[in-house]
Image (cartoon, rainbow over all chains, first blue to last red; front, side, top):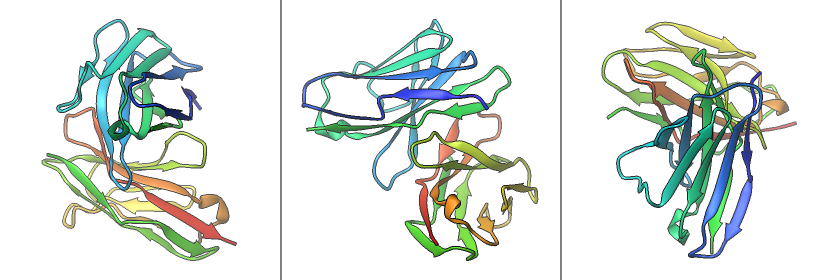
Amino acid sequence: GAVVSQHPSRVICKSGTSVKIECRSLDFQATTMFWYRQFPKQSLMLMATSNEGSKATYEQGVEKDKFLINHASLTLSTLTVTSAHPEDSSFYICSARTGGEKLFFGSGTQLSVL
Amino acid sequence: GDSVTQMEGPVTLSEEAFLTINCTYTATGYPSLFWYVQYPGEGLQLLLKATKADDKGSNKGFEATYRKETTSFHLEKGSVQVSDSAVYFCALTGQGAQKLVFGQGTRLTINP
């Protein structure tokens, strides 16, 4: 089946630094990618929807200036957590949608901000 | 808004035991319902789905029936294996919506 590669799988950073997470569709073109966040014992929450070549659409309550999403090509979307703080520590996961409307997920990134 | 509630984990069972992971939902209209599974180190994968009331989704020995009267979509398997150890997510898309709404996930561990 289709593969979505998410990198890194785990990152630890200092408070105030920025972290970039990459999401690549390896064997298909993804016009739409989604970014989710999961806090411990809570649901996966949709953060934003990104369409190739256009600005991302953010869910209510998600700061677009803090969580920068770039979807520059049909196979790559990036999420940058700017000026990260301990409360941003979470599990981030991306998904990509094929032209046939199927969804495939990355394996997730565990972010820990010290 | 739409929401999904799963039974809290973690769940630990012995091999060949019967599995039930409860899932209930709140949604207007007629959502589509899904179970996703995440094996260690991998992305979420669609396990099964049901798109209308009384539909039964099944895959790899797992089953779930769309029960509108109880707003439930419980996951069951008659005899679990060690390889079923994973995190299981119940999810829905609301009628006419494209976004997936997830439950919090249930970690399942099967001991030999």
